[in-house]
Every structure is written in structure tokens, then in C-alpha cells.
Length: 117
Image (tube, rainbow, N blue to C red; front, side):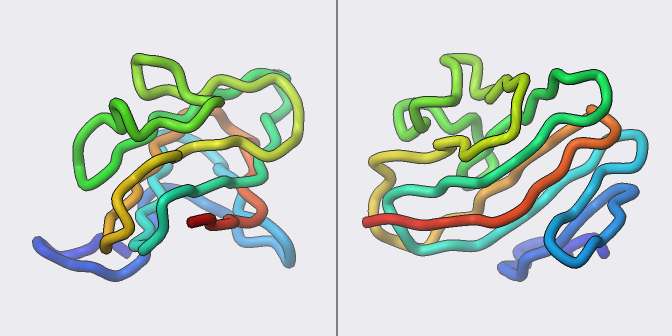
């Protein structure tokens, strides 16, 4: 389901399969769009069969920049080669934001988001 212009609803774009405990990217580019109000955002993820994955992190439609979490590089990309919690956003202002995650690695799984002050 693609969001309309100005939409503030969570959505998925791309070929995702929904399991009981996770979303799995099947092929192509997959996007997760999530509104939130918090200073920190974490996500438990697992790479696909290749063993490596990368997720581009956008905050309010722009590269995450200075609000990036410890697992996100200066290029706004979180790269990982094992399952675990990724610290995506840290130090964001405590106002309503839109998190956009863009992935291209088939088999990548997203499990659960956590939020902090």
C-alpha cells in the first residue's frame, strides 16, 4: 500500500511477506514507512541468505544525518551481517517524525521496533 502525499500512516512498499513475527523482503526494493514520536528508534533485523544486508535510513524524508543511531554510517546506511538490534535513530527531537527504511536485500527480515526517549 503506497501512502498518499502528506500521509502520516505506516505503510509498506514493495514485495514483503508477512510472517507471524517478522516481515521478509522477497525481491526488489522494499520500503517501511513508520510515523513515530520518540528520540530513539531501534529495529531487530536479520540479513537474508547472502549473510549481508543494508538499510538506508531516512528521517522526515531526508538522510538521517546527525540524528543517526550508532549502527548507521555517515551515509545514512545501516549495514549488518548478523541478526540483532540495530540502533537507527538517536537524539531526534521528541516530536512527530516519519522514519523511512529502504532495503534491497532479498530475505532481509524486520522483527520488532523499540523506541526510547
